[in-house]
Image 1 (cartoon, rainbow, N blue to C red):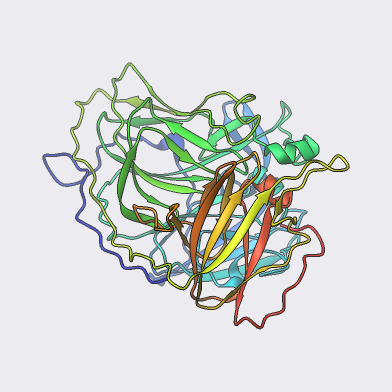
Image 2: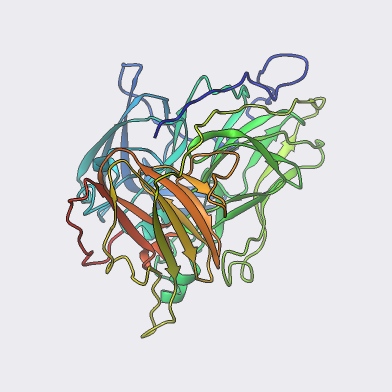
Length: 480
């Protein structure tokens, strides 16, 4: 994918001077992420050690759980690189179950995609695997397993990967990476079983009782009223959607999955479905005596997702006594090449949930669950327009491995502002159109609903990208 990048000078700064930090001391201590140390002296190489293991973690005062972790923390540590760096990750598995690492949203070679039986063998107990690739796109990405993913992600295996571009032109010094998730455990700190609720639990998509941001339940963030902050947010939950409200105050969205978008848009409520990332500027306003809550509002992603849930406080902003700051609006932009749909091959995908049979439910794509389906096919260099029709009564965040796509409107034109996506919500009883260009990197790439219970319940498949001569196959067993 060829991307032309042009960013304006940094704005959204106080009207009296250049960008600088206005955050009070220790403003984000309650949200601090552990960051992996780079062991390679080469400034263009980031080399880190990542270990999957069990560890006791505290998500709130007196609330501890023995979670599945990367490097003993929840979430896994922040891996930070710059655009164009080579990332080398020496991964070791100290769990008793096999696992892998998938780099969600990153344009990696197929051998680095972390899907067992397709791109790499699973990493068994005490085994290791070295991942290595060049990070070609700035933005927030994340990593998680693709073996029994609903269970392993739900138990705590996820972490952020931030690819920074020092020339992105945003110009806001006070920045946070926010990993949204949830987890379920009992009073003894024992994790909720991954198969709770059986087939019905799979259909509903299981959500944990504790909503977390950077592994904390309802943390506190300190701020100066009116001072701009940049939040890079990833929804790492296995099923939950986050419908964020800052008491009606605006979010300025400057980027999504694949980095900065064509131009900013503002909204007073922000939907982030499972697997999606959003890059926003917020200028929280308030008084010292009146903390400002960031809340996850109710969103109907299917029957039961509203009826049996409540509004959740995600975090609380507490204001200092300093005078409020008056900030200019953001004008950062990116010149993305307008994609052409000329010559694109039409592909239809129909997502369904047939009536339960033998007390079991299974989601299907074009009438088949993934363990019975053959791959979709694409020649190398081919463009395709995917018409994804959701005939089920549940929303499905649709994720493609290895490639970005453009969302098209009902007329077949790219949705503006232009943005690079790898995950998009397909609402219940609706249709979404996607333009995908398989311009490089042959291999078998996964597509699936990012509600991981739905994926493991059948809503998953692959697209085989090659020279058109590759032999298709049928998946014989259930795997993730």
